[in-house]
Length: 457
Image 1 (tube, rainbow, N blue to C red):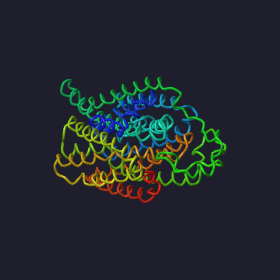
Image 2: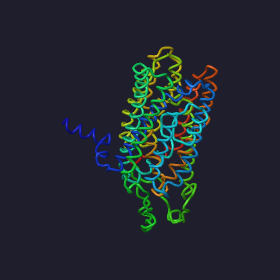
Image 3: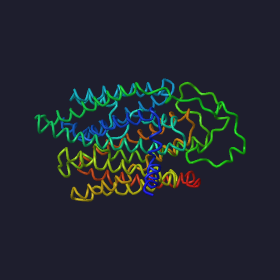
């Protein structure tokens, strides 16, 4: 009986799917894990590092805004040409760029040099993904994994990445205390050590990219080769993650330009992608008001905790967040992607608005941990839902477009936080962010409930 329950649990959380996913999927997930260790480490100390250089909060916010603008431009342009030059080459080139970014931050203390590097390079103030990595990897997984297995792989992709970002925060905090206490490093030198770790991790990613095979590259759309479906075929009920709006023969057979800003989609699919992008953009703008760099800055200033303790805070919340994200797989299979997205994300949105209320560190920590329980459970369902909207040949461009909209929405947020922080009112950013995120959740439910997969079950 116990073996049956164990087997059931393993299947529910997608371990069977993961164990048979193939080498390319493993490398993609490993790349994300290593990369997010670096992102988690640098995002924890980015605002603190800039402040230690004597830069006012207003200019720290501007720095983050310009960083997001650089990410916006690079993500948009590179996602357009990724499938033409090759997904493997794109991952390799961006990993090299990430390595160079870390090296410059490890060497320079000049604000203008750091700003230019952040714009042209790959760095994250939020602790999440930047650059075209996410776009390329999402579309590659969708190409490598069958429809019905994608929710499992996306859940593990999210969980392991979130866990590693949390570990990166812990690593940064511990490293700073070690080099200061044992080797007499100054605060600026200790922060630079974190950027050198970022450089090392990026170099490892460069090597791993060399082992990816051509299987991740875009495949010709089978719709171009297979005969048109009959009316009877079109009346059959869709599976959980099959394409929600099938591409008609007329749309599929349109000639495609080699370089195009957006793929050729049916009008209905275009409308869905635009609506989804706007709602994701609202959520991203809210997130830009409370990125990990500003949250760590807020907690350190309010409670004056040491760096190692600060790292432990985000390790704990990240671990909890990553572990609970695995629960999104069975929820998505049973209730559908939209319902899972909304009812796991809404509690986290409300709790975010409550973060400034406690006057004690322990209560603030408690709110952050409880929030982390459902904070990322909507990520894998998002990937699944978006992947069902378009065909494989258009997926990279559509993912890229959506991610560009999300990045564009994040541009002004850090500057706003910088201004209100300089005036001693950073707590307002948490209230606004939580309210906007709750609005996004309600908007998703109202707009996309009819596309939920629950009817299939």
